[in-house]
Image 1 (cartoon, rainbow, N blue to C red):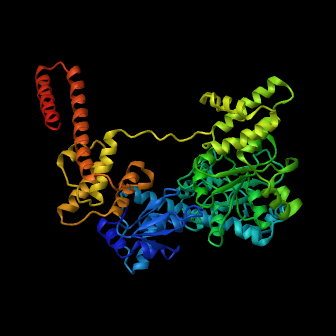
Image 2: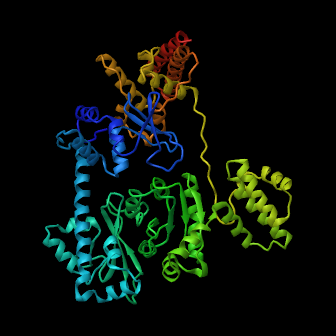
Image 3: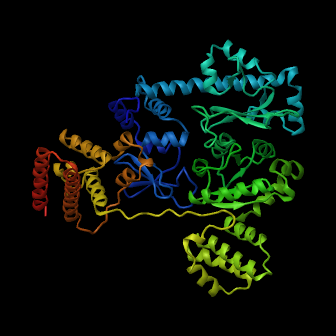
Length: 591
């Protein structure tokens, strides 16, 4: 990967920033044996499973799977991009930061993003300053009706647009081009080609990302209008509604001061703002869109428990049901709260206060209990046919649970609601096929299936890992390189060969410069390979080499046979037959 800095400089940067020393600036590490340990800073855990390998200069969490070198750690912990993480580490080491020379397209994209961020922050400041103008009376009246104080307005950067043109004039006065304003999604062109404010005459809510950058806006119409109540920034280079979480910057600030036990997901930004004003600072919202896997993964870094708290109306209920399986799939402990009397969180906390809200949260239902009770409410359990349908749907929920002990708990719950014995319910559960797992609530919990690796892939991972970790029984073999079918495997092998050839030893953390390790299960498996003690690994290594060569030759033979079956040229046929014959001889000699 071209990461913008030379490999030599990155090597020097990492050698001047020992990973144990750097990580100890952020969390406390304790040495046990050859490894340093701590509770993972990227997910909540009671027993520390975050390991730092001082020799190979990388970290790995056996709980959440986070893995990386010292640069990656600073990126994740500080919520920085690669460039800014390198800059911080260079400051730590007293090193001069060289010119950033990534791929030209990457450099241009980075410059374009940075310019968009500048446009957006200047627009946000302008909208905020508008609140001091006489034309902002309608916006101020609305803010007063929602009982928002000055501190809350400032914290969330709330502002307003007073007309359709002044933002254009203001941004032009700061030197921004029309193209830059359009790229940022602040303005649009009318039918005559003239620019106008996308959010004209609306109340403005800036949207911040994890890094504290303004990435877009959500704007609320003031008074009666034919327009939609809320309007969000259109898709831009920095704004993607399916990835943005309103309030995540405030959540990050909270995490920096205290441990977050749970994250509360609500529907709208006014819900987040009202809760924050009332002292409830762990609430976020998903920008008026359905919760996505990206939202779930970003929130997972803050807590292991999440409470879904959507509005009590039918739309809110549907949003809750859609979100459960996504949150469960990334490992959240999911709980659900239904606001009484169809209120939304904003209305509820303003009417009843923080204590009532806290009591509501403490009585949240675990997702399985919520789904079963929700199903029960859809049927008349006094009627036999409806009771049977309820049992089938409820068992579909229980079927998705991974342990028998957890299944037992909710089988007892179904028993108490239906008077059907546990043994009968267990029998029905065992006979329930996967097609019955989709229940009436439209919830379907998909469990990841770990496909067994074939012998070839296992062999490749063992051989490359043994070479990378410098095992005394591991030796280079060009026949292995010739039969590495995955270019990433070949790239690692070539790196190891170059290091050995230069009289150096390969370093595991180098792979974090070459690949997105966390984004590739195969590379992650090699980086974090666990060698089995007590086994004859030297013999296994030789066996794996034979498997790699045999598999590679077989694949090439099959490819040539396919070509032979389609060609009609006699000369080409003779050449193919000769090559096939050579491969057959190699296969015989490799036995």
